[in-house]
Image 1 (cartoon, rainbow, N blue to C red):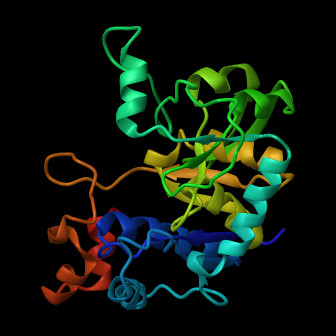
Image 2: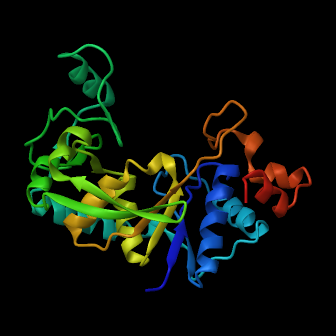
Amino acid sequence: MVFRTRFAPSPTGPLHLGHAYSALLSHDRARAEAGEFLLRIEDLDSARCRDHFEAQIYEDLDWLGIRWDGPVLRQSEQTQDYDAVLSDLTARGLTFSCTCSRSDIRAALAAPQEGALPLGPDGLIYPGTCRGRVAQGDTADEALRLDMTKATAVLPDIFYYQEVGDDVPATIAVLRQTLVASVGDVVLGRKGQDAVAYHLACVIDDARQGVSHVIRGQDLSEATQIHVVLQQLLGLQTPVYCHHRLIRDATAKRLAKRSDAQAIAKFRDDGMSPQDIRRLVGL
């Protein structure tokens, strides 16, 4: 099997040192394995994505010495495929319509209990308010959620995926009976613009691009169980996952795109070289 990995940034701001680390790590690993390194532009957030940020992604990667194989996949050009998968899951009775706002969810979770609200890999764990509604999707604020109870009913009691850390592979078990309580009914899509959610889009695209290894930050580690559930439901191959350390600022906070001080372009403008960037991120 060809070793194939990808770098999948969103053009919502300039790439920073954390992106550089992830892209370089993935690119270096693909070249070491005589494999392929793919570039995917996750530009579904039309409210925040900008053409000049996408152009800067190409410029930054080129300056770092990163070369990708084959054409760039842009998610905004794949929406018909996402819609078809959403329609299939709905036809199978695995989704429901939800009109709850974030404040509705927070209020419903806070009502019967005190203390911290239950958090899962996709944020607050949905309390099931709209579960059982027919998935109509006929209003702009209506979301399509995966009915995790129905979804887990058609899954094996236990299934697995491979995680590689420090080059040591580990087999991770996902228990069907824990998914409802620990993950909940995640959003798969929304009526109108930006109709498909990240989790579903990346699963479809990893399969479409034949990705064998997903190399990404530790902040997405817990979300992997969502992706493996979707792969099981859709009959897709599950890649090997590697969740690397995060690059943090001087206060130990994870870097964000709004932190222009850590932008690759700024380091370049300040006279640093690609090798300097490698040293900064520990490569």
